[in-house]
Length: 145
Image 1 (cartoon, helix red, strand yellow):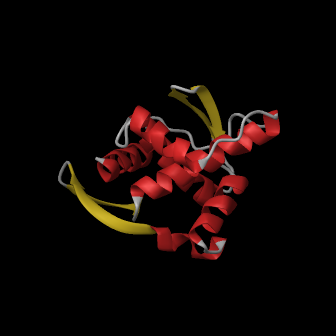
Image 2 (cartoon, rainbow, N blue to C red):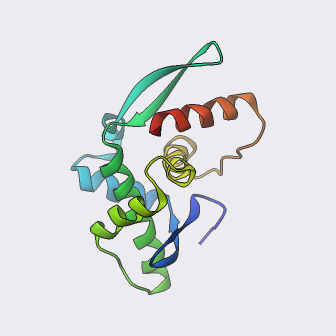
C-alpha cells in the first residue's frame, strides 16, 4: 500500500488507526449513498466566503457528519482488510468523530484528502505555501467551522 497517496491516521480510544482514501473508499462511499461515481458531485454544495477581502468558492459535503463517518469507516476498514485486522462497524466512525472533533484539523484533512482523491486521480497533493493551496485549505477550514 502506498502510504503517500491518500493515507493518514487518526488517534482514537481504539488506538492509532490508519486509513486510506482511494478508489475503494470512493466506491464504498458512493454505494453507501446509493449513487454511482458519476453522481458523486450530488453529495456536495458550493459555498462562498470572504477571505481577506477576496471571494473564495469551495465545495463542502451537504451532510458533513454522515459523509465524514462513511469516509473514515471505509478508509479504516480498507487498511484493516489489507492487514487482516479487525473490521469496524459504521457506528465506531461516529464515535471517532466525537473523539477527534468534527471541526478539527484532522477532520478537515480527511475531507480534503477525499476531495483530492476525486480531483487528482491518486496523485498526492502537496500542501505548502502555494497561494492556491493555502486558499483551498483556508476554505476547507471555514467549511467545517
